Length: 249
Image 1: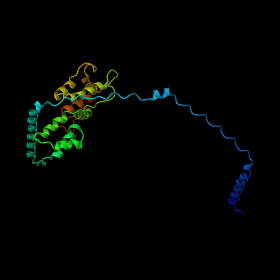
Image 2 (image 1 turned 120 degrees about the horizontal axis):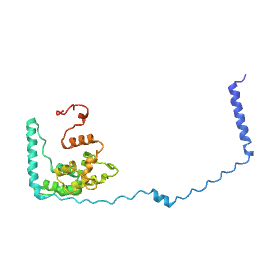
Image 3 (image 1 turned 60 degrees about the vertical axis):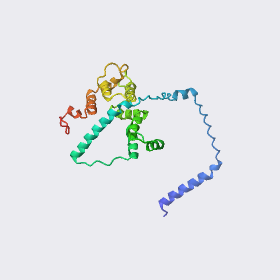
Image 4 (image 1 turned 180 degrees about the horizontal axis):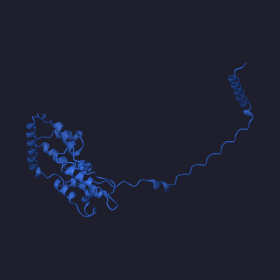
């Protein structure tokens, strides 16, 4: 007796063969009509989809460092060095060796402008002479737009600058631009902080009010960030409990 599975497969094979045998006698199927040509894009639609033009490039005007203030800065730096030295002695810490000129050059550029010196800049400094060439380098870097831009980026994080509006009637660009110009004009730090914390009026008349408007609907967050940035401590945990680390709580 033939296997049932074998008989089934044989029948399928015969059916397939017969279908192929008479396939040539059938009339050829009509070719499908060609699709209509795609409509050419309308130039007016392209114009609507174009992105708005970029704002014009802004060229900052950076206030140069006043050479008359160098003597005051040297005294202040010497005071800081003395405090660090006494703290090292108290903790019995041996300071590292003094920097080479190449190391100082790289660190000065990174700290002040956020960039490393080019070959031309490095060559000019290393070939310069004079016992005050480090001071002259610092003054020249502080007088560049690189310093203003690098400082702005640093404080943009600290002040939590925003791109969107604080509310419908104010533009964040006013406050952001005020912060940027503060570094371009070498605004004194105490005046910079005072104008933000004591700002009054409307943002369009006094852009420094943007600092307070930043957290207008969240006063606790604004106070917490203010204390953290300008007093060096934290009070955010005091909203619910004593701080686990700070002694004042």
